[in-house]
Structure formats: structure tokens, C-alpha cells
Image 1 (spheres, rainbow, N blue to C red):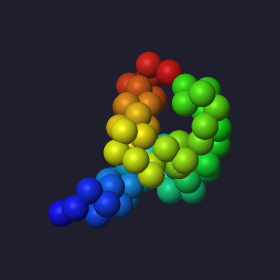
Image 2: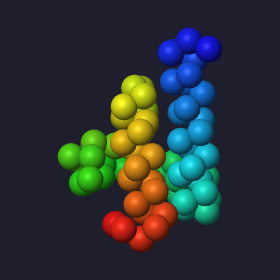
Image 3: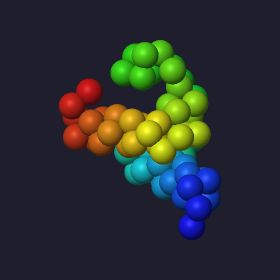
Image 4: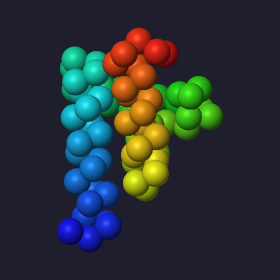
Amino acid sequence: MGVKSQCVANVDSVIEHAVDVFGDKEEALRWLGTPVRALSGATPISRLSTLDGQREVRVLLARLEHGVL
């Protein structure tokens, strides 16, 4: 699997993780499109185009999931 196809597959996985955290696809998509202070005001969806950005969003989701934020 090339880097680009891996990146696309990871986007789906990040979105699934967001749905798990928020419990609802609509809420997850709303969050992904909302500027987040922890991302310096960027939207989580805007960070999904790179593997580093995907990791950053995953860490943020994990923090939300465990009540750290």
C-alpha cells in the first residue's frame, strides 16, 4: 500500500474513531469541521490530509475519550 492510499485509509479510520468518541456520525462530522483550540484554531478535518495531522487528531480524540480535555 502506497503512502497516499494509506493516508486515505487512515482518514476513514480517524472518522470512525470520532464517531466512536461522539457516539453519533453527525456529531463527529460536526466536530471534525469545527475549529479546535488544541489544534491552534484549525479544524480537525483540515489536518487529515497528512499522516502527521491524522496522528494529531487521533491523539486529540483519545484525550477527549479519556476525559483529559
